[in-house]
Image (cartoon, rainbow, N blue to C red; front, side, top):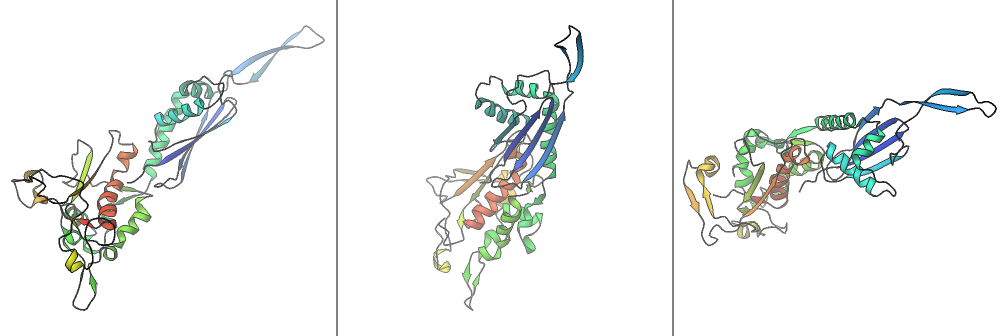
Length: 330
């Protein structure tokens, strides 16, 4: 499934000046992007007294120095990576704490260390990190899922019909016509799904179609896709085989789910009836394959930001394009 991004964070401190660089590092899914944060703290003005060797006269000299000298990383670089997490203050502090835990002769926790490095500017530093994360998320390119399709399918209405179990994606299967030409070859007809995965889905935010009836007002923050047929041979998934006209007429996906009950009134468009229900006793539903995903409460978390990417990957790329799984549960 789609992987969340990793982030590298670098802190450079020089005396009373604190510089932080929040770096978004490319992992399996994200472009390399850098957002620089500079926090210049107010350098403390200290009073230094000294005596000349040949006089008892005491002279006062104003100097600029950092009055806090107990930061473990004062004047040093800190580098750490937070993997599979969110771009947030908490993740930043977690990474800093891990770096401190691995350092000898250092008893500071992350909050104390950051406070010392910034001369008490922790609140401002964390606020800037939050602002950086928000700016980064807003800067990522966005794309709609239906851009992965072509022709009559390249629109929101056709995409909704696909999620309801319709369109040629669900209704057709490969066969050999009278002239010996292979027709409805999924890997060829829908090759743009693969192109979209390689060129967009791993580097951009795929918009989640929350205005579609299938996904609107989702309070439980989870989506679940189920398939009842297999239309593609030679992919080590399902039991569709060649020749298609003989061994893939009513092929099944890999079975990982038992369907017990379906209330048609909950999804009248997908069920094609306004109401009623179906009960499946003793596995009479046949082989069914389902796969779901969920996201968190925080809309800036990776799971929430990239839920559209997960929807594309689960529904169109992994299960349809790679495995050939189609058709909805009746």
